[in-house]
Image (cartoon, rainbow, N blue to C red; front, side):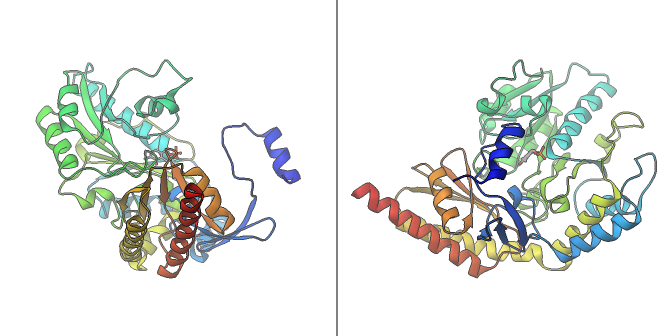
Length: 401
Ligand SMILES: *Cc1c(COP(=O)(O)O)cnc(C)c1O
């Protein structure tokens, strides 16, 4: 039975989401409650957003204090939290400069605009085509949609923006073949998130770096999902012996307040000059104050090391499940971005877990994705594994009977 609020919602809101029929009202750490008082352990974290968990006291205090002081003034002026955050990002990454915006799509738009401007400034405007990969997800605006290698997401919005060449993921030869004198950049997620937690094969990202260097292309890493500690390092590129030229961030940057960032090396960033690009809300003191709490917690309060340790524990438990249940084809991912590739439908499993008090996510219909807050503990993982085991047992029994 649907409650009245859900009925109203289905009448007045754009029908862009398939929502689960619960109204969430409260959270604390890795726990959420719905309007009927039911409790859930959260392995979704707002889709890899709430890395410090829900109702984090430090975040709540930073937002409240900053709201009393200054929420917004426009980027016509300097504000302290934004400066401090940019400084932190530059100190902790390969990048020299940061542009702030409000979402992952906007961060990627900024990256796409930056590479176009970079080559135009160098007198080669014909170099504007960006190579991206199948199964990728870069956002829902027209440019980022055009960059996204998933037909189901592009469908209905054609024609796509010109200038994107989509090649198979994990295939260096395909990239080499796609490079023309019009190419300007390669854009990839170091681990594909929405595409189903697809990891790069050994040498793939390093190989992309080599191709880019040889052909004079820029390398863009979309770390909107993998960045800010999700994979057990601050940024996923740190797992590999290379750095990109540009990196985009969003999701976890401000633990749930809307914030995105595009980071670049000086040589490339220099193509953005006053008036080139802008965002009214980008990097307001309010969201930047929250992001500073996230940054501090990751490095100084052990959240990053918890992610690394618990992530390894979680992956081992998923491997235990795989050795028990034959319809688990693959366990993959890094840190607390983990996936179970199933030979069966995943959506029904998500629903069964929800009934047992666990929120998990399913990508591409058959890949269970686990992206909990990075503060999650072993006991909570053990409980989820017991739940999954029971749900899988039920399924096996049903398919036999
Ligand atoms: C979520 C996501 C985006 C889009 O972010 P929005 O904030 O929804 O615009 C882009 N790239 C990746 C890798 C993502 O996971």
